[in-house]
Image (tube, rainbow over all chains, first blue to last red; front, side, top):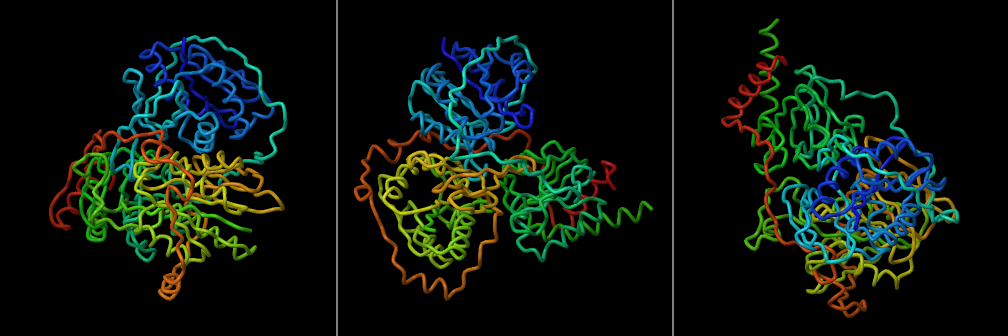
Amino acid sequence: MTEIFVLAEHRQGQIRDITFEMLTKGKELAGNTSSDLTAVLLGKEIRRQAEILSKYAKRVLLVEDTKLENFNSEAYKKTLSKLINEHKPLLTMIGHTSFGVDLAPNLAATLKLPLATDCINLEFEGETLLVTRQMYGGKVNVKATVRKAESYIITVRQAAFAAQKPALNGEIVEASSPLTEEITKKRFIMYVLPPPGGIDITAADALVGVGRGIKDEGNMPIVEGLAKSLGGVLACSRPIVDKGWLSNDRQVGSSGKTVKPKLYIALGISGAFQHVLGMKNSDLIIAVNKDPNAPIFNFSDYGVVEDLFKIVPILKNKISELKEAKT
Amino acid sequence: MDLIVCVKHVPETAEAEIKIDSAGKTIEKTGLVFDINEWDDYALEEAVRIKEKSGGIVTAITVGSEDADSTLRKCLARGADKAIRLTDAKFEGSDGYAMAKILHSLIKELPFHLILTGALAGDDGYTMVGPILAEMLGIPHATMVKKIEFSNDVVKVNRELEGGLEEIVEVKLPTVLTIQTGINEPRYVSILGIRKAMKKEIKVLGLADIGLSENDVGEAGSWMKIEKMFVPPVEKQAEFIKGTPEEVATKIAEIIKSKGLI
């Protein structure tokens, strides 16, 4: 019976959420294609993690090797190549994460197997693999067919699928490591933690998030004023940190913080997936953006299609007035 | 150190309203402003900074039509020494894999120590060209790079992971690094710099010049083929507040107050 592989992603002992999201989708696909769902786990001293994964898959394929202790795309590529060549899975699912994007394209090129990246959905129509992806920062979706092959590789966007509770009791199968020699062309050295201190945006009840639409560093006091009037904190999307206008402890999104304040006001933020991932579970979301088709409006409770500079100063005054009236 | 930077000429869509064209496979490009892909902009700046420190030359390469010359001119104005544009009607419809093949067929003939490109392209977001190119060249790679440090024949890079975490990875030269935004602050180009760059040569090569066949490129040479483009389905549509700025601001303030947040 053919298999669907899900590569388990883990870091510092923790299995990452994307793994369970892929296993959930993988289970559905396995059902549709009469395949077995196999979680592939590579690492060192990871029995405990294998036990956890066995509740989500028909089988856990486990390879333990000191050289797999930390993620290294070269070590993973060699090991996965062997497993894919031996098992010929119909599909190998890898997270579209920092690890996954380092590995999957390189692996696909090595095996000469077709790869579809950053998929938000996938299905088999007969023998054809159809994937859904986003383009232009999430402003449009595309359906694409993947070139016919006996085995496919895809990377899956984080949070594209909701992880379900464990419902299986799979077997754990150990496979030998093909890594006989030390990998010298690429070596993991160490993790670097974000510097301590700074502001904790995850603790704020009200966040004012600012994006590209702010245009100039000189405009920052305008939005800062609004945050202050609300007794809240200023946060931002990636471009603001890249430009050095705010420090990275203020960044909301997949490469920054995940926040869940009572109020999130998004100003001049288009709503690229990476940002939305970090704020979509806020209680109340209000977005101001000039572009009526900005994706941010699909995740907001209230939207205003307008230049933020026309709204923010007045809004700040209104809030201050209401505050004064209260006291 | 000789450096190659792969850049892409893309429409700026972060703040533009975009429409799907009538054939339903791509967006309407008229009226959009095109520029160097944002990630590639940082890659170019990093390459120029490395050259300024260690010597060598920077070659900027793009795949695209004549319009893409403006992106190459920008690279030249910012400090690239050479510019090459690969172009052919047959390249149309290429995904990241076909793009990597096109780039590889040229780059394998060039001298280099380091290849830099953006971690992804803002238009198609494939996030695959760098690592595929590395595999084709038989050299290592590292993606999502936020810091580069050289020591002898290796390069130590900080890769961006999720949630503010980074990892340091050591890679042997020659290598391909894909650059994440924010690694540096791309320099401003003066009008004079652009004028000077107008005089520099841009070498143009086609399919036959790089020894590829029709089947290697475009849709035929790609892993993915776009069948249909559509507006993303809406999970939760915002309730739009309309009116004058005064009215809108009043309404928002009331909503915030009604939730007990003032």
